[in-house]
Length: 87
Image (cartoon, rainbow, N blue to C red; front, side, top):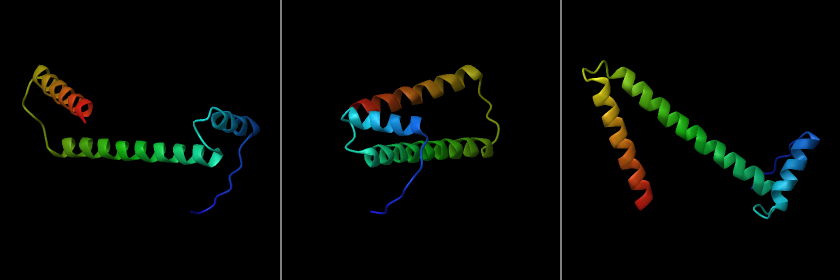
């Protein structure tokens, strides 16, 4: 594992140390690794969403009503939520 030294203002250093003291993290490195993992996950989610938007824009104009579009989106969202619950 590689080592990286970072500098933090006193208030941020205190915050990191408080998070470690909660017992959720073994040390400050665990806390920082968790932050990086979460940021990576958010970046991947943003990238996927951007791809969906790009694909939608490239697909052209659809001739359905707003209500029908909302119904389709809600149906897909409900199905995805149920799939996550049963996973």
